[in-house]
Length: 272
Image (cartoon, rainbow, N blue to C red):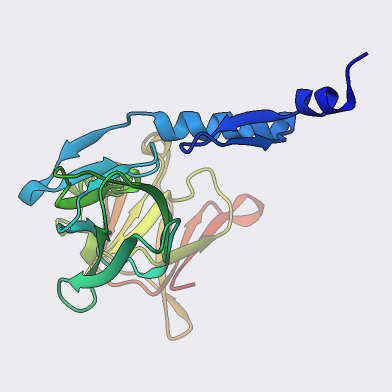
């Protein structure tokens, strides 16, 4: 029969410390699994590339960046412009120092974390919480090698740039207006139901453009009345394909098709 001391050690994980001392750590299955997953994430090589002015650029969120510093040198970790730091937490606060700094114009300043180790061959971790995200960093000190400037690329930046490109492409295909999309007023709402209900209404503050579904090209277009002073008024407009171009800056209008019980009506209101 196994002695009590042997049964106890069977449920322990034995770790050998650098000093040679053996430390017993009792980890449950989920704890061990979590530790393995975290270790695998920390060990991933990830993507690192060179940015402007010699900056070492990590892709944010892909891995835990490992930043190499050196005694008597400084590592400059630059965050995204406009991002404000709430906390910078170090695993080793005795032999590592972090000083904040800023660069750039007011309103678009970038925060810099200037990291300095006291001696070589140190390893610690740092967590930086900001107004936009949380950084999990690994810090290593080397006798001579170091990263002078460190920065990050953010996946959401790519999505934002794609959205801007799509907006410009859409603006270039907006029919009728002939002005940039940012100068158009899309603040119109519609009520009512009809097969020809417009897909969108916009204005350049001189003319108003009412775009219909493509299927309307084969049917009779509705009649437009502009509501002004409580009365329905007829104004000049023309149909060009699926687009109704109104020679008036419309605040409120009614589109009407048919008569009697079969009449269909759509109400258009700017800012409604």
